[in-house]
Image (cartoon, rainbow, N blue to C red; front, side, top):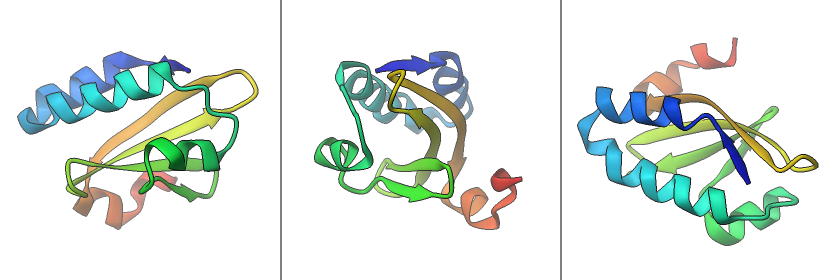
Length: 95
C-alpha cells in the first residue's frame, strides 16, 4: 500500500513521544500490505474498525487511534488523524 503521508505519523510521534515505535510498526506493515478489503486488513490488524468511510486502527494498546481512509482500488492509505483515545471519543474528527 502507498501510505499518504508518513509526515503526519512523524508529527504525531513528535507530539506524543510514546508513539514513535508503534506508528513505525504500523507504517511498515501497511507499506508491505496488499489490502483489497477490510477483511484483508483484519488479517494483519484484527482490531481495525470501519467507521463510516474511515478505517480506524487501535495503536499502542488502544491508547491512540489512527484514522485512515483506504482506497483499496488504488492501493492508497490516507492518514487523516492520529488521536488519543479521549480525542477520538469526542468525535470532532468526523466533521
